[in-house]
Length: 457
Image (cartoon, rainbow, N blue to C red; front, side, top):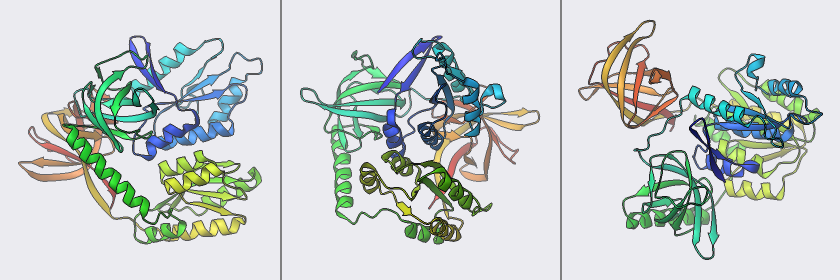
C-alpha cells in the first residue's frame, strides 16, 4: 500500500512494494511508479541475491536510489563491509566519494529514521521533481480488491493534476464516477493532488496494478472507451499469442527496429555465471551491445519474468528451471525464456542476434510546447529562453524545434533546462522554465519551443 509522513513541514509519500510485483507491473504498463527508490540493506547480512534483484528493478526504473542500512544495532553489524559491497554493485556511498546516500537505521530501535527522511528530501530537491496540481490528471493503480458490500475498491497514486470527488474516470478496463474517496488513514476527502495516495469507490470492475487512470468528461465516454478496450483485449486473446523469441528478435534487428539486446541471466552457480557474463560482454562493440540487466544464480522466478516484461528483455537460463509461476507469467506477459545446458550454444545465439542489429528508423513524438517570454544572456552559457510551458512537458534529454511565425527555424538539442535557477530533468504544463538550445543563439521573444523525442517507428 501507500502512506504519507511529514518531515520538516515536507510531505513524503511512501509506496511499499514487497516482492516488486506491483512495482514492475506498473512499469510494464507504462507507469513511473516512484520518483526515488529506498533500497533496504541489512548491516549484518550485507548485499544478498534479493538485494541485487531489487537493485536491478530500481535501476531499470531509472530513478535515484537511497540506501537504508538497516539493523545497525545488531552486534554482528558491519556497515563498512556492507558499504564496500555496495560499491562493488555500483552504489558507491557518498562518504566513499560516490553519489549514493547511505543512511544507517534501526527499525527495531527506531533510530536514523529522521536522517533517512532528510536524505529523501535532499535527493528530491537535487532532482527537482515537479508536478502541476492544475494540470491533466495522471495517476496509477496501486492495487484493487472487491468488497462484498462496497464493490470494487481501488487504491491509486495521483502523480499530476487534482482528482475530485464526482470525477468520471477510466482505469484499464474499469470505469465509473467516484462516489467516495479516502486518504491513506481511511478518512473521507473530496480532492487529491499530486503525490497523494487515495482509495476510491465507484468503479465498474477491478483494475489491475499499474493501470493508468484517465479522467473523462462524461460516463458515456468512459463506458465507450472501456468497451473498446475490452473488445480489443478479447480479440487479442482469441488470436495466436506467441511470446517474442530470439528468432523474432533477429527479424527485428534485420528490420532495424532495435540495436540493444536486453538480457536477464540465471545460472546454476557462480562457476557458470561468470564465464557466461564474460563471454557475452566480449561480444559487445561500440555500436552493438548486450545489456545484462540482472544476473544471478538460481531458478527463473516470476520476478525475473516481470522485470523482463517491464524492460523489454529476454530471460536466459543456464542449467536451471522455471518456477511454475514464472512459466505462467511468461505466457501472460509475452516474455521469451530461453534455456540452455551448453554455454557455447547460449553465446552463439546471442552473437547471431547482435549481428542482425541495424540502426532503427525513428519517428517524432511531440511531448510539449513552451512560449518564449524573455531571453537572457548568461555568461559562459549563452542565450537562455525564459518560457512558460503551455502544454505537455519538456525533458532535459529532449530535442527541440524553434518555431517562429509558424515556421521551424531551427532543430536541435536542449542544452539546459532550469526551474527557478535550478537544473531539473523535466518541466510540466503550467510551470515556468529556462531553456538553452544547443548551437542556436538567435532566440527571440514570441518564439515557440516544440519539444519532441525520437522513438522507434
